[in-house]
Image 1 (cartoon, rainbow over the protein chains, first blue to last red):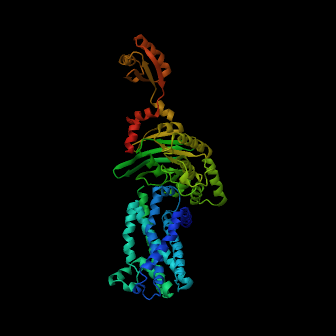
Image 2 (image 1 turned 120 degrees about the horizontal axis):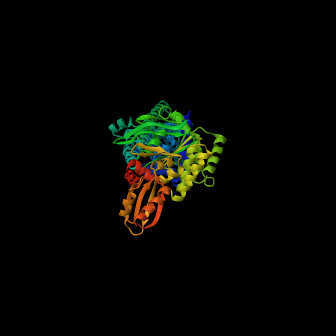
Image 3 (image 1 turned 135 degrees about the horizontal axis):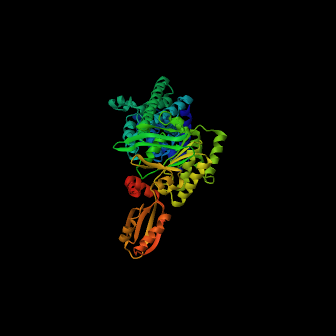
Amino acid sequence: MRAARDTLWMVIRQLRNLMREPIWIALLLIQPMVWLLLYGQLFSRVPSLRGGARTYVQFLTPGIVVMNAFFGGTWSGMAMITDLDRNVVSRFLATPASRFAIVFSQVVRGGVIALIQALIILVVGLALGVRVHGGALGWLVVLAAAALVCMAFAGISTAIALLVRKEATMIAAANFVALPLMFLSSILITGRQMPAWMQSAARFNPVDWGVRAARYAVLTGGNWDRVGLYLALLLGLVAVTSGFATWTFRSYQRSL
Amino acid sequence: MDTIVADELRKRYGEIQALDGVSFAVHEGEVFALLGPNGAGKSTTVRVLTTLTKPDSGSATVAGHDVVRHPNRARLALGYVPQESGVDREATGRENLMLQGRIYGMRGPELKRRVDELLQLVGLADAADRIVRGYSGGMKRRLDVGLGLVHRPTALFLDEPTTGLDPEARVAMWEEVQRLAAQESLTILLTTHYLEEADQLADRLAIVSRGRIIVEGTPEELKRGLQGELVTVELQNGRAADAVAVVERFEGARETAADGQHMRTRVPSGAQAIPTLLSALEGAGIAVASVATSRPSLDDVYLHYTGRDFSADDAEGQA
């Protein structure tokens, strides 16, 4: 129970600090809209990309929700590095604070932010004529997919932060995974238009699990069993990567 | 009962033997200083005692709790003020203290009362709701102290509490430490590489050098251990070498040496030695301009026990 309690307070601390950065809030709100408008315009004249969807924005919106969450996740480790550099972590270590909470609060913070951004993107999408066919359950699925994708990658990102403990290396690592995994998914184009080998590779891409779940919820409002499977896979991955991050935390402690 | 006990602590980082068998005990209610140059092993000792790192061998207890076997029990009994400030700069002073209290499981009105009390205690009541980023170095340091005290620990560890502070803030911090020791009935272990600071604050101190404790005692005991006071005689017409020759014949005079217009010697008691010393010099026709005695400083103590100069070791440890 200490772990849950400490995680809660540490997440509140991080979110409260972020809320005090007006520029950060502006970017948080504007960035997803930029994705949606930019890509929406760029690819809207190529009908084959959107599969069976009515409009490209209808097709793109769930993809952008997940892409945004994925990018947010890969950068999550930066906050851990700041806390390490500023000795906030070592201060916590001399207290009975749950070690798991120190790590997992970083992951949860990412998930909460991804959730808020997903809501914003969906609302902007509605204004652009997007319809969520899955109804209320569909909305929940999109939000869950965003939060889980972000948390899964936040776990890896936090683990890398704890291993390298340097901002420059962290940035390089995030860049290294971000674009390849984005293009190895159906974020921008329907899976059927991808080369065969990429289609096969995408099946193992957690980003694509999130995109598919969110897209079923928005486009068809069906295939709930597939949606459930993808979300379950993502949940499992969150457990694995968070566990890995907690394990790397031990190696950080040994270095003290 | 001894509140803090270290027994044969050893810890190696790669090639460097940071701790090479450190043992000492801090009595209840005492202010104890680990004094040594940079890189002597003071901070590593504190990191072991505060459960941040595990020793390779040896054991330690805080308030009777073994820091390796029962770290969480020890953590409840100890407060830690790290060398580098660990405050959350984007939060207010009050928010920092509230979170720290929550981590220790404190809640509701009890926590709020304690936080108000601490803000008063460390003199941050007026700045409580300002973001820490705007605090001065001294204010941040005081908040660090407050964070270490939230849960009313029995033992407080201050790692280099005044490093990086300007002289004024340093003196304020000394007063703070003395007040806390009394008001919160704390046992305090502090590390410092300022001889003056250990002299001012510590009831007892241990000199640490290259991962070992060289000597331990009250500042007075250590200085007395040097046996005697330094007598410096300023000569009117030079002839320092002649003066040395005269004084060296004295029983009890040690380390007699000439230094330009001055002759220095160390005697058991300045008050007793000076009259005979002066008349002997007069008898030899050596004119004296002035005489001064000085009690040994901890600088002298360090030199005496390690055979090395404190500031030179300090600079080396920093490099």
